[in-house]
Amino acid sequence: MVSEVQPDQFPPSMPYQQVTNFSATDPQLNLSFFNTVSANLSFSGQDVFTVNSKACTYADYWGDNGEVNQFFASLCAFFEIGHSYHYYIGNTGNEKTLVIHNAIFEEIHFISTNLATTENKLSQYAIAPNPVTTILTVQNLVGINSVQLFDVSGKLVYELKKENSKTLDIDMRNFKTGTYFIKLNNDKTFKIIKE
Image (cartoon, rainbow, N blue to C red; front, side):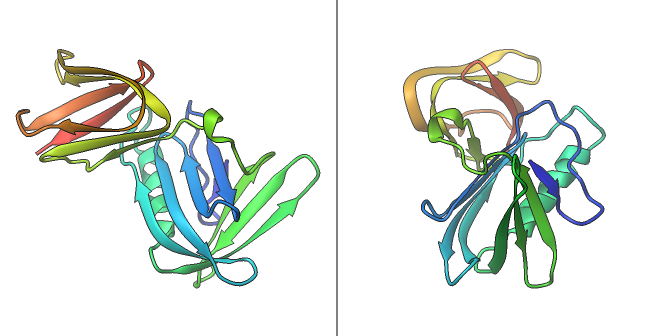
């Protein structure tokens, strides 16, 4: 769970499981809330890593007055490609805290009883690009079994069933410009924009 991006900025409450996966053996940082941040890392020296690449999803959360979207934008912006970060892990018995800080001493804290999660328990979706003009790529570490795409009136305009595919490409070229909702695995729904 992220406890803060800046000393006065705490994550708003969301009805979604918050998962942090950070490991030096698998040089990745994965943060899952309503949206996700995924970064490929390289470790250089003791307690230092560099962000080689990152991806963020940007689905709009409608359950509040914009606090979740604003918080996630700050979280995504904190990790910059090519920048180095220092980190340490504190252990207070039942709970571990991962603290990451950048060159200008901004810190982000992750509080969890377990900072790593096995892949079969982790359900992270990445949908990009959003807005989309041609091909929409959908990814899920656990796998995708079904995709349904609805227009703003709720009409089903596309459906696909697959068996545990981790990546799917959806050709959006023939769809009209506008807002759509994509439902994955009969579970999570995300808003996408077709340009």
